[in-house]
Length: 155
Length: 169
Image (cartoon, rainbow over all chains, first blue to last red; front, side, top):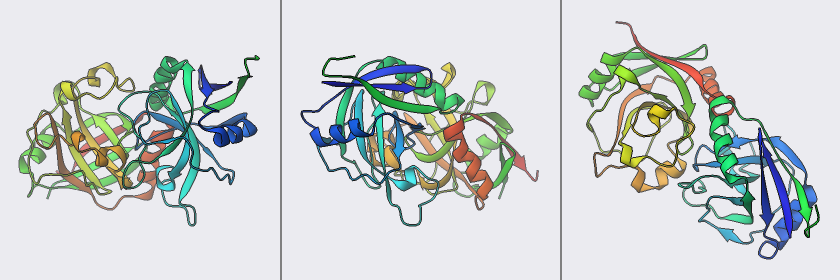
C-alpha cells in the first residue's frame, strides 16, 4: 500500500495509490516522484487542480472513469488549449496529474466527458485542499509537490 | 451603438453593446456604469473572467433576446444572474456576498469560450426557467493581445482590478 504526500501552497494532504486496479500507472507514478510543478486550476472542469508533466510519458488507459469525484487522484491527457492560451504548433494534449476537491466537477475534453486514469484516493487533508485551492484562485497559484509518503506501511 | 471601455491591469478593450437585440439589458447595464471590482477567472466556462456586481450596482434582470444554448464566442460579454437555489458548491473563492446569489458581467476573452463543463451540461443553462439568466449584451471589438494575456494572468496570479465604463458619452 503506497501513500503519497500532496503539498499545495500552505497545506498538505495524503493519498493512497490504487496499485491493484491501476498497476501500470501507479508504478510509473512512483518512479517519477517526487515532482514539483506549478499548480494550475482547471478553467473547464470545475474544482480541479493539476500540474503538467512535461516529459514525454506514454500512459496507457487503465482503471478509467468519466465520473470523477471528490478526492480522486487522476492522470490523463488534457487538451492543450485548456492549458495554454493558444494551441501549440504540434502539441494537442498534455499529460497531467491532478485531483478533484469539490462536487460539481467533471473532467471534459473538447466535446464531452474525458476518461481519466484513477490512480488513487485522497484519504487525509481533502478539506484543507478544498480551502487552499479557492484561496489560490484569489491570491495566485503556487506550486504543487507530490512525493512518496510511505510504501507498504513504512514511514 | 453604445460602446464600453473595459480596463484590466493597465490594458484596455472596447466593446459594442447590442442595443438593437437586447435594449432593456443594455439600458440597465448602462445605468449602473461605471462598475469596478476584482475580476476572478472562471473554472467551468473556459476563457472567461467575471466581475461580480455588488451593493447598489447589483442587477436582477429578466431574460431578453434570443435563447442561448451554451454556445459562446471569444469577445462575448454576458450579463449573468443566478438565483441562490442554483448555487453550485461552496464558492469559497468568492466573497461571502456572492456565495449565494450571483450577479455578474462575464467577459469571454479567448478560445475556447464557454466550453468545458458549462457547455456540456444543459442543466447549467437554466434556459427553461428564470433561475439563471444569461444575456449576451455586448461584444469586444477585436481582443487586444495584451488584454487577453492579462485575463489569462487572472487564472494564474489571482484577482485583478477590472473597470467597465461608458465610452464616448
